[in-house]
Length: 271
Image: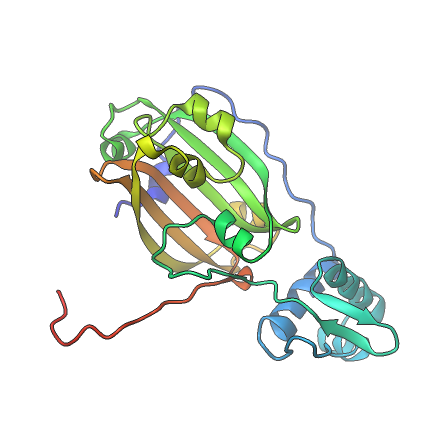
């Protein structure tokens, strides 16, 4: 599959000007402790649902911060529905914040669908929608003329106002009217396309790999540059194999669980 990320660097002409980027606020020390608690005590599985987190004193010593900072971090976790503070007892883990797929990994589903299945709501931040001129590689992918307008849709997706995914879609002019997409778009390009049977969405060819976040993507997700993320590059196609969208996604791994269902098919495997 062509390197979509490299192609973006070659796109220099814009038909209209995107809205100014709204940078996420700088994180506080308490926010850093929230991420450490999530990583070390919740997502690691060391604390199970219904069990208590380490005490304020223990975490204060573990992270070399004041108990006031730990208390602020615990308050944030409580506000997000991750723990319940029992006065005189401690902070009890009450909710698994990861977003399970609840379907095979090869199922063509949006993050919004997965969230709804888990009883959660995805919102959008830092939305930018603009028409750009297709470079040579993008034009070849979509089967359009070099320089023809394609639609670029980029945004952060949040769970409970926490940034968890940075997404960039580039949409072919042969997929759907850009005006229709703009008017119906809420958070998912895929869901708009699927809502129109005439578009003929059939499948997406995807590549998944771990990456270290660049400074730009990290700043959008309010994390440190170099942190690991799950990178998904995909090309959505219709039944006749024509490409509809090129998509890049950077997912913070602590908020997602993907499972693979494997089955035995015998010794005669296709090469």
